[in-house]
Amino acid sequence: MCLGIPGRVVEVWDEASGARMARVAFPGEERQVCLSFLPDLAVGQYTIVHAGFALTAMDEATALATLETMAEYGVFDQGALGPAALTPDGVR
Image (tube, rainbow, N blue to C red; front, side, top):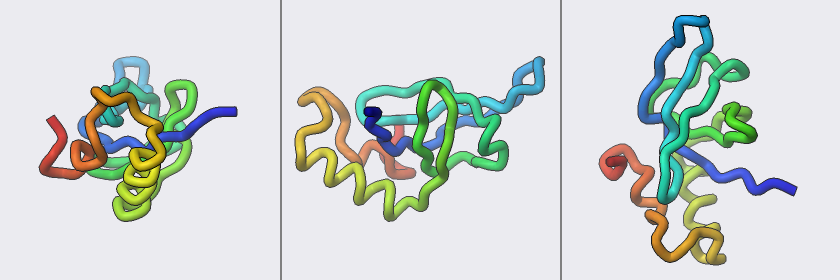
């Protein structure tokens, strides 16, 4: 079973190979993600990622509510950034 954690797209680019890629911020880390399944995903939008691919887009309210609930249940390590880190003004 996998746990899908919402992340916020902070950068989008096209590789020389033609692959559409993004940098996505999650609580406590950022990851490089392939946008092959969601090529229209843009900076500021939220997504669920599995195995390095963005699979589902979600609205900000749902993403932040999900992150808040996950934080309440202790899903994130103590050192991880809270959900506020994924808001437009909070991303490093």
